Amino acid sequence: MSLLNFKFGYKTIEGTNRLTGEPFVRYYPFLPCKLQSGKKETAPTEGLLDSGSDGVVIPMQLAHYLGLDLEEASPMHVVGRAQIERYSSKVTLVLGRGGRYCTPIHDVEVSVPAEGDTPIILGRDPVFELYTVKFIEAEKRFEMDPYVKPHTR
Amino acid sequence: MGKEEASVSMGCVKGKEGQWVVVRNDKVIACGDDAEDMFTLAEQYPEGEVVVTKILYDGASFY
Image (tube, rainbow over all chains, first blue to last red; front, side, top):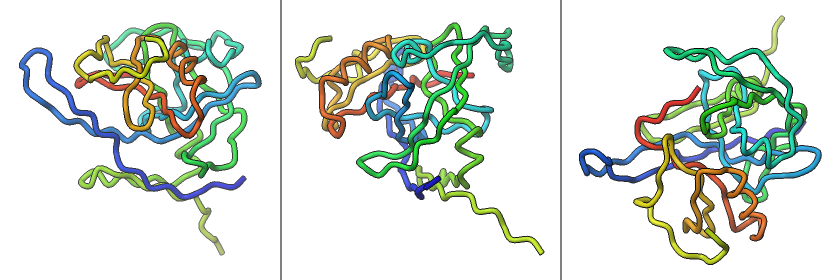
């Protein structure tokens, strides 16, 4: 598998607080990617890098777009909330953008919540398994280098 | 929203947790609650020109 190193700035979102009218700026570590099924491929998109998530999560509408076969899975456990029903499936994940893409990562398990409208969430499996990810929060950017197993004697 | 490339301001982006948008050449050309609609719309444009992403609201939380 050919993995590339990546450096991206956080996505900047400017808006206005709907209650107070105060302007705000928020920054999010979105990683450019594409998702593929055996039937379709998404346009270039972005997933929220989330080390607190076990794996990849996608919204139900995206699962429909890709034509994924959904299997019932054990509910998701969410802090402070009741369990959320979910389905699971598999996709091919391609990281990168602008013609600079890593080798497709096949058979990536995705969770598809039955409710809510999650963004694409890229959790530890497989992204943090394959990459050393460094968040430079003070500079609103992140770097990813393919993980290299240290030599042992 | 159809294919016409009206610029969409962030002020019109509404939703419980945020909203899906199609960005073409750094301009938001469509927004909606349904990711499937946005990815379908993006098919009409060359891959190198569009990105489909989600604008998150301040305070939105996920799983």
